[in-house]
Image (cartoon, rainbow, N blue to C red):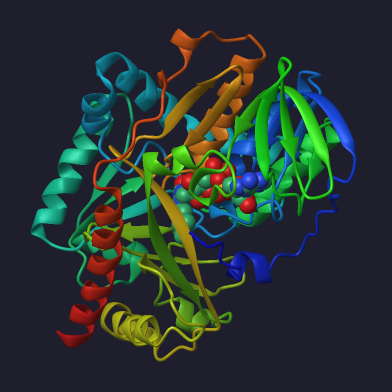
Length: 426
Ligand SMILES: Cc1cc2nc3c(=O)[nH]c(=O)nc-3n(C[C@H](O)[C@H](O)[C@H](O)COP(=O)(O)OP(=O)(O)OC[C@H]3O[C@@H](n4cnc5c(N)ncnc54)[C@H](O)[C@@H]3O)c2cc1C
């Protein structure tokens, strides 16, 4: 897996800068966190606030991975339905995880308020759109399952869906008021700035090249420095490089691409998500639509962008906008980027206990803003001794490889490209 440059809209349009240093000396800390995304920054914040000596070591810059490339929907729960979560990890843990992740967007938006993070947060609910009758039935079932567990999502009919989206051809939607949208990279930086302010050491452009346990502690080696730590949290998700390749076998990489326009006029925006909700749909190769605070139109779908000008994706997106939002008119795609998702075997994240104080959280399967924030925080509580393993919402596990992983990866990417070709033909 090669790292891809993060040329996302979020990266190119961010207003704040975040000053950090390269690790260039020897450090000794209680806890070292590898990876500066939502999971690492949330854990670092919690640990630093409790007075722990903690260092974050990031290969590139904070938010280089999924945290700076995603759609920015602060959704509750996971991609799969609550019942499937319970089937995947058992009733007790499944029920606990469903409850825990149902509240996770509250944590995100509370942290944004508490630390005054400027990330264009809008908590007006997200919309899961039904693209056909089967999708509508699936959403009815999903809404029932969520509400039976104490959630309160609403099912919208076709007219109510159109009122919020101005999108043709959608038959209904789940409106989930627990969620909203953010500028994800600004949120990630805001969390990490808060962690730094609370005392965490943050090192960027410092890839950990080796991780060894010697004489009772962990030794992390970067190109110019060294860290010794009692405990280590790997918060690298789909962007893991150099170390512990075994963890990669526990998820399948899947790419998701997005494109964004320059800001559109209010008149044109009246025909593209007038309710300003973040949305995605029930297609197997799903589509997402949202706007940002500046009024840019953003479209996304599964699959990788192979070339800078992404000809297949561009013509696909033009067609989808013309069909779905005909009143918007032709647009130019100024921003194009891809991100890597870590799909675990059953689409539920893993907390791996790798022994001797080494832990890893990965496999968010495309739902990591609220889950990464919440699991990073509760793992910090575990390291602080505030919770014990049976109180974690996920069981601590050893690494299990996804069967036929390479084939699954080819299936994800091949399927998404074929579906774009099909969409252009019909
Ligand atoms: C395109 C896309 C759209 C998505 N949309 C949504 C969405 O709308 N809502 C949602 O909830 N979730 C979404 N997700 C999922 C979410 O973005 C991720 O689950 C989340 O960002 C994972 O955060 P993380 O902190 O665990 O990992 P990451 O943000 O990926 O961070 C891992 C970091 O580890 C660093 N790293 C790796 N190896 C090393 C090393 N050896 N040394 C030092 N550092 C290292 C990497 O450079 C990287 O910065 C999306 C993901 C993608 C890719």
